[in-house]
Amino acid sequence: MRDCAINQYQHVVAIGGGHGLGRVLSSLSFLGPKLTGIVATTDNGGSTGRLRQQQDCIAWGDLRNCLSQLASRPSVGSLLFEYRFGGKSELANHNLGNLVLMALDDLCVRPLEAVNLIRKLLNIETKVIPMSEQPTHLVAIQSCGNRILGEVEVDQKCEDPIALSLEPMVDATLEACEAVSQADLIILGPGSFLTSIMPPLLLPKLSQALHASKAKVILIDNLTQEPSAAANFSLDKRLGWFKQVMGNKSVDHVLCHGDKYLTTGIVTHYPLRSRHHQALHDRAALADALSLIVEPQALDAPA
Image (cartoon, rainbow, N blue to C red; front, side):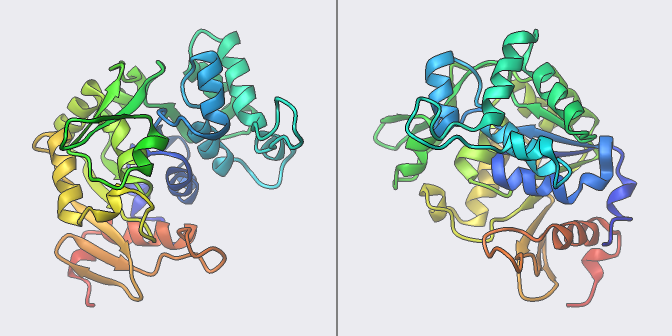
């Protein structure tokens, strides 16, 4: 694994949600405390959605997923954290990790303390921070003026939204803003563009921190076309959305899957697909590709 180039960075921040962000964090976990994940907390589906309806809490599912992918395997802690109840009771389809995080939140002063307790339990050095510690929902505005409330509902709509917002508008977690301010490398994605990557960027203080940051910004593209309106978004359109929320700060480089290593402009193609699961990035390949991008000579490498 070509981890030397990434190791030159003292503060690496990855932003996104759930499965995609968890994959990035686990692939770069050798960075330990130099790595921070800022996790979307707007999900309203599945076990997380049920808990949000009943308890008015933040979305725990993406946080749980990131923590689970960072946990040492196999271990009793990781197995319990990912355990999902079966049967037909009220617990059916609830994830034990979500319930544990919610219970710890009740016992702690703030949600981040609950996350840190789980990190300590699972021996995770990488920092994992919720984008906000206050409940909020994603809202998509369509060209006709309609407002679509909720992540699940936004993903189900075929029409491209013209804008996104949060309702209610909440504060970004202070530690998330500090991590972005200190970052020398920022990674966006992979994951659902509208419902995983964009929500943290909609927080004013977090977007201001990104705008002021001098860090290199890398976007990791998805391996497959996502089943949402964002499937119609070209790369230029997505980069345009980023620029709207990050001000003058722009994406410096885009990493995409390809059959061979090839860099054209700001886009690098690299074989990233896992041999075991076609929809997942290979962890070692992802770390290798990121190291190639940040090496000074990477952009001059022959195709």
